[in-house]
Image (cartoon, rainbow, N blue to C red; front, side, top):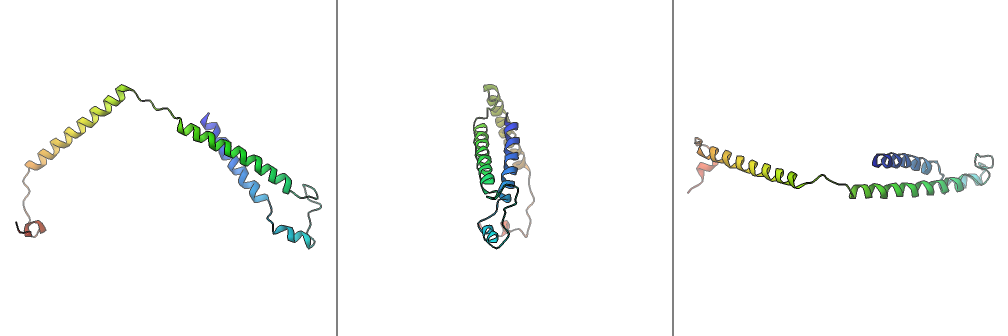
Length: 125
């Protein structure tokens, strides 16, 4: 179901972008006053403003609905959590900390020769 909503959401976004780009701005009306009117246009003498603005409103409302449904799906995801999986994670954490303690104990037993030009050797005690 979520994949279907994602698909519709992406398609609505593309259609919404196309509808916004097809609409003309407020400055386009000035060109009609000087002889480039849209009397013979595809959408009639009134232009495409009514059709495109209504279609944009409808697509925007559908885009909003799919956005809200995706938010709902995201908030209500169920995770497979059981008592056994929590116990397994605790055991892995305990094992990792035990390994780290063993590693640090082994590293502390190893003698590292001191370097004569090291800053550590130059600090007075």
